[in-house]
Image (cartoon, rainbow, N blue to C red; front, side):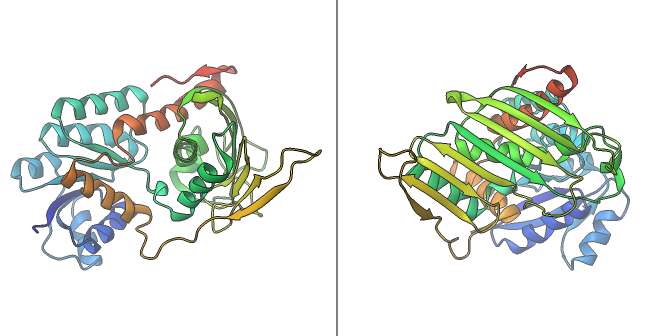
Length: 339
């Protein structure tokens, strides 16, 4: 079967991570690579020893040249709108890095462009492709039931340096999209409204607010709470957060790593109901995780017409949670989440 030709846009650290995954996947070929910095794509290809790839610093030129089956957008968030819309107008499906866009208006325009072109646009929420998270979801469905409470804690001392240190809302803008999207994926619920507070403790090395607490009302009456900090050194949670889910038949927890546990109620009497423990299933062998999982889901969708996890009409709901949380923090009141 012929390989699909990929045009990769962006040659920074994440662009190179995508290049490695494209090169390792036998159903695609990294045929073109673009970066607005002259020679950046060519230098990256040489560094990674990826041969037979056309490089350029101009997207329009490469789109006109043709020969591509899809575009991978790994540019900065501010560039996602233009790269995605130009590619869709050229008749090419697009898979892009998160977040979808730097504003909700731009994100909506990108969704409309996908509809107009009749081409797939998917956002790579790569952390959905985690076998341990799927094990947590399975325990909830089997042993806990429809959720009424979902909590996540995210605490890391992230000393990045660079642009994040200067961002106005570094935690919510740059990181929370992962956790918010996981909350939707784990619960199967969508956002309705949010009350959020942002703050920055005295020791923070960030200019903007690096901490946030939010409570979301979700469809079905679920309450999802988020507590996060990017300036908390020591006793770190995982990058996937630490989770607790509560439903009518019990509770489940996931430490964001390997510990996936549930207690299911087995007797309906007594001050504290008797429960029985369950342990999440071990990850299957050869599970395609992270970027590899996103890429495979996207290619499968191109070949079969299936709907991948990060399809734009769905993913914009996760992005809306981010901007609604920021709006709530600025307004000091509960805000409806507007898609």
